[in-house]
Image (cartoon, rainbow over all chains, first blue to last red; front, side, top):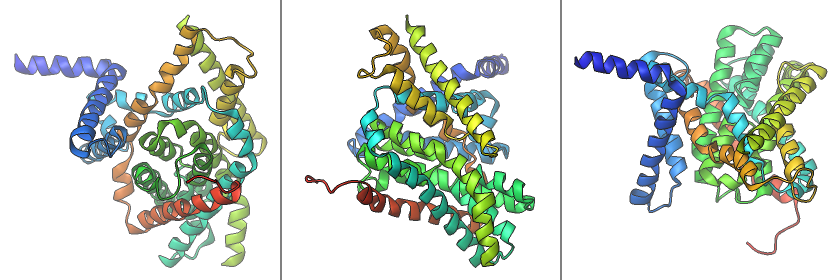
Length: 257
Length: 123
């Protein structure tokens, strides 16, 4: 009888994954807002705590299933992958632009564009240097890892274009994942120190960081009003990275080695 | 009708993503270039008061603001599906590369923010 009941629950949750995900997220947010109020007296945003809890659950899910989709690899939570997937994420990001200030965007125009290119090159150079210090000397491997330090999409795209080994591509993905997760956690912690409290610096932040998921979560945990500005520039980053890394940047690395 | 707002949002989204794919293929990159950004600009242009191309009723607006408010819950779901294990189990090199890239980028924000605009009077 009891096993029947658990089976029925599991089956209903699995068949209605997206609906289950709404409850999942609702419970996390309720717990986080409560923690924020009682433990930190509102000092730490409820959403920052919720994102951290999400990442911890992703870790637990990963350990339990050895999969790559965090908690969503546990069957009854599979809907979390739908709700947290790129489609809903990007759809909601576009919605945040409703009511955004067009003038700020226009004023920051060239600076926002520059921040994307500077961001890609900066992360790339850091990635290449670390790989070089770690003993890599092959320009293809160096470029691929550098590209991964930009985002976990630029890495494999570049690696595939240049014909890098699959273990190097995996490393580049890991570097990009580390970056995006760290941006999620660290942004609310350093926001005050780096002046991330207005639309102008949010535009630059998005351009420099570039990881859409990192920027999305980082700003959500810092100040949701800044989301459209950071997301706007971040959305150009991966494209610019995929353009620069396998071409100009690879060529430069090739010349220097 | 609330669905008008959702439909406007969806139309902006799809047009933006198509444009991003087009730009990507034009410059020979296997990625979407700025699709979401273009969609955002589109939504702002269509709905902003100054241009006032479409007068949105209160209920229509709520079709957009609902999704804007769902943003944080969606981001939390996104966090819960991250490949955290993949990042942590890959060895120190990848973690250091990712971490230093973040540190360098954070450090660059105040620099660029200062270059990009006149010094503020209030702090």
